[in-house]
Length: 122
Image 1 (cartoon, rainbow, N blue to C red):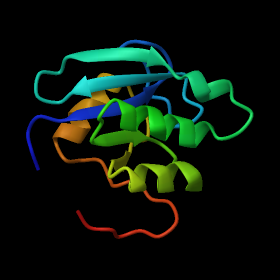
Image 2 (image 1 turned 180 degrees about the horizontal axis):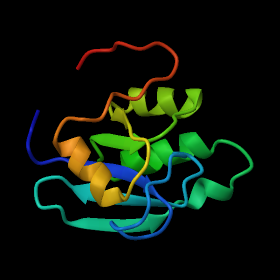
Image 3 (image 1 turned 60 degrees about the vertical axis):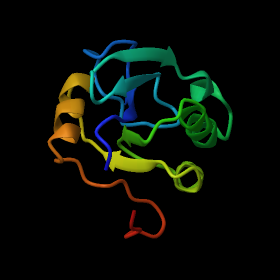
Image 4 (image 1 turned 90 degrees about the vertical axis):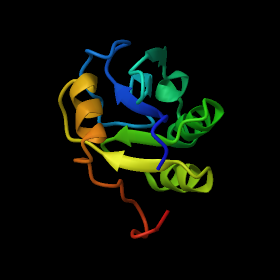
């Protein structure tokens, strides 16, 4: 796996110090982080209030930003399929600040996200 990697972590507000949000499609904000430099940018999740398809919209948003991995708490079946189709890895976290989730990810401590069938290889 390459060192330079852009990841997305769902968060409750627009900061790397914000709490992690376990909802992917309905999470309030997305924090995009370069794992090499730890530079980050945040944006509001425009699909959070959508009546339907929030997970797919979130997956498309991640894909547009050339993200290699998404860290959230739960992936619905449509979001899972959309991310998988885009070749984006999914990881699951269970709380803490975005900064802490990033540290766990870099240490290899987060499990792969699951939905539908599991055990796909890279």
